[in-house]
Length: 178
Picture (tube, rainbow, N blue to C red):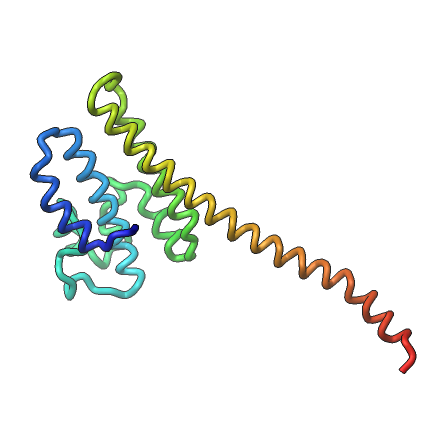
């Protein structure tokens, strides 16, 4: 079940300060800030003005920065998040499957960088759990993409059959006596 931004932010404000493990806290904050930055792009694309919105739409250190640079293409954060231009492009084109795949890939690569130096420790278990979550989301995204592609192929196939049969059916209709 998907939670709203507001629910996630409220939960994060309770959970993050309670986390005793720095690695777990940093990992959760990274994920929340990634969501905040992509959410800000989505809000701006939808024509929403964050100054009129309660700050419960995002989490982390970038909120004031995003507000200050709201009119800049990527809030002047493309140096921190080099994938933001690609995310914005997918949003503009409405390519939600490619967008989700990119965001999952960004998270996967981040986890891959973090696993260096962690072999049989708690942090490695966290990375493993986060990766399983990504695999689950990736599978859903791929299933949705496969379903959309299948529907498109069926539609194209039916159109091709209709185009192929049209001359035959037209000739047959003309050949039949009235």
